[in-house]
Length: 371
Image (cartoon, rainbow, N blue to C red; front, side, top):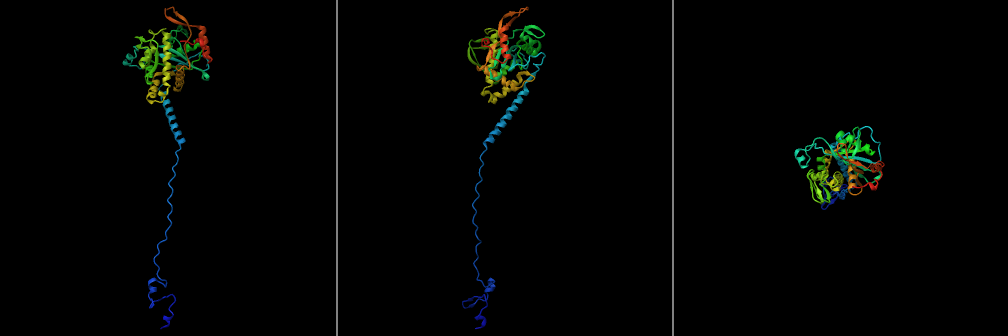
């Protein structure tokens, strides 16, 4: 045996029956071949947690809704205000100094402007031209949250008209329009007029229809051909033309003009009460027609706006609900002019007491409150 066999080179392993001379060639060295090792397994990472759902920010959402509603209301108010008609009713010299509280002069005009032939026939408006007034009221809204007052100024009141001597109160409107009428009212009452509002025949009827009618209770039936007012006794809902006939009727009403003035105050309060109700304010099918009717119906002083009308409506609604005063200016007797016209003469002493209370924003004496 050779020395090489007895002392094999380092790194060679003897094999049974001899050495494997080709081992180095197969695995490149003396180390025995190793079985292939699988790649190390990585520990699986846990799945990421699901994203947390953000809780809704209800305060933010409610704030956005309220902001949108506010913008809608403001925009709607500006739109309605742009529809209102205006006139410089309170621009004249010698105005009474400002008095406490807020005072409105309300005028019902018989103007037929804007009425077509069918509407004139429906409303029994006739074909008279121009503007006259049979309805004049003074509304006082006191400071400090007192009770508002609605006072009728009879059209036949015999009063001094600036620059035209003594005549019926409605003659001031016929002669000089809103300006002379307002000046006359300030002169005879010593009460500062802050706002002026005039409403025509067709507009009044449209307002009533826009709010879905008004509720009126009659002690006796009304049958007046001149005003086309034919209503049974009892409580009932009046539509626009019926309401207009109700406030125009005078020949079938006890007290004539004074009785008609009482009916006018009653219906005006009922109308404003319905206009300010949630059933109207939160119902777009009533609110939008009401706003459009108001915009094309009311004639205001140049400085008056829709928000002034809102507070007027609220005050009249309070009067209708019993939280206010409704009456007629105190009068002494019926008289007759040199031309034979029948007129109403105010009770000077009681009228002064009433208008002094209003000028000082004080409650009207109870003994002066009547129909």
